[in-house]
Amino acid sequence: MNMEKKYDIVIIGSGLAGLVCGAILAKEGKRVCIVEKNEQIGGSLQTFKRDGVTFDTGVHYIGGLEKGHNLFQIFQYLGIMDRLELVKMDEEGFDVVLFGDDNDEYPYGMGYENFERILGNKFPEEKEAIHRYCEEMKRICNNFPMYYLRTQGTYQDNSVFTTGVRDFIAGITSNKKLQQVLAGTNLLYAGIADKTPMYIHALVVNSYIESAMKCKQGGDQIAKLIARVIKENGGDILRKQKAVHLEVTDGVAKSLMLESGERIRAETFISNIPPQQTLELTDSHAIRQVFRNRIKNLDNSISVFVIYATLKPGTFQHRNRNYYYFDEQDVWRCHDYTEQTWPYTYAFFECVPQHQNEYAEAVTIMAYMKFDEVKEWADTHNTTLHKNERGESYEAFKSEKRKNY
Ligand SMILES: Cc1cc2nc3c(=O)[nH]c(=O)nc-3n(C[C@H](O)[C@H](O)[C@H](O)COP(=O)(O)OP(=O)(O)OC[C@H]3O[C@@H](n4cnc5c(N)ncnc54)[C@H](O)[C@@H]3O)c2cc1C
Image (tube, rainbow, N blue to C red; front, side, top):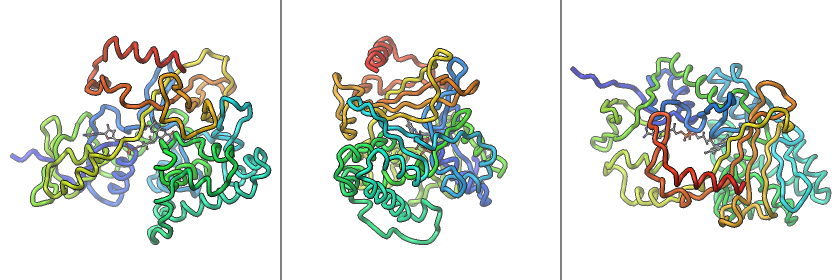
């Protein structure tokens, strides 16, 4: 008796991308299965609770969710927009850039009009440059038909791929301070001055300038709502099922082996896990060695050290904005921290207060951290599924880091 399941589409990984992809295909009539190795779906949309507070692990605020914006349109199509509990951030400054040696604050206004007005007041001599920056941001994003869900059109301007973000901003203004402020949220895309192409900066920052929102009860509500759409349309989501091997015959992927020993057959397989890990799933000759080597040798972006803190009630004024702080006025130096200069920069996100609005209840603070700092624990895993403390040395490492914050 053949116990293998058969689907039209199998998607590996239930992150936001895998879920949205699965929901679209399920709504279009495909029989979809998503396999997820963790207990909780959502990947970086996962949340956890401490002291009664829900903390986001990877989505602290979201752009493009106002009517007509790109993510709004996708979520509207999926039918989840009305059920999302969202809080709009401060239109007079949803992101604020701060420097240790400057008492002033540099807020990003929501909507290009506010953005221009607020930064223009900070840099009156630079109003024209700020206007040009906004126009360029819109132009670059327009260059990507899919970003605005246009099915027609091609990339009009290849320079957006080849110009580094620092050069792009320097081409807009020679004012050093304004350059720093405009690049002040580069932690969002782990930006490297001369390596990150300007389009990455534009696509990410534009979505927040258009509209910035927080999820009231944590980002996992997005994952749960999309999962419901998939199930309502006949799809399956298999949790605690790690994909371990993709079987390929005559250059065509035929079935996926799970760690549990189960095998799933499908017409099409879509991977929502990192490219290196995807290629490790199969040794098929259909993928040329030169391509494998190229992918294997790609650098991973830098990681982050995160503090999740609950606050004493009534002590910290609630502000509906995020802060990006730098010790000095070089926002591109963050990757090159030393033991002495760490953290140098951090991002500060408040959780949406659940009980009253005047005071903050919890915050998440995030600073860059290189993988080398934790490589001695590379082979350890501590998840709800596989509990495994990393030992005293790891606890001592974390405690030392906390002191430097
Ligand atoms: C620290 C941090 C902060 C961030 N902050 C924000 C923010 O404030 N706003 C914002 O918009 N974006 C933010 N992002 C980015 C955003 O979270 C991600 O871009 C997005 O969630 C990624 O979704 P994804 O589907 O591509 O991948 P992921 O969320 O990584 O999903 C991949 C999934 O695949 C699963 N998986 C992996 N291997 C296997 C396997 N072999 N078998 C089965 N399943 C597997 C994983 O468990 C995971 O669930 C942040 C990211 C990080 C890391």
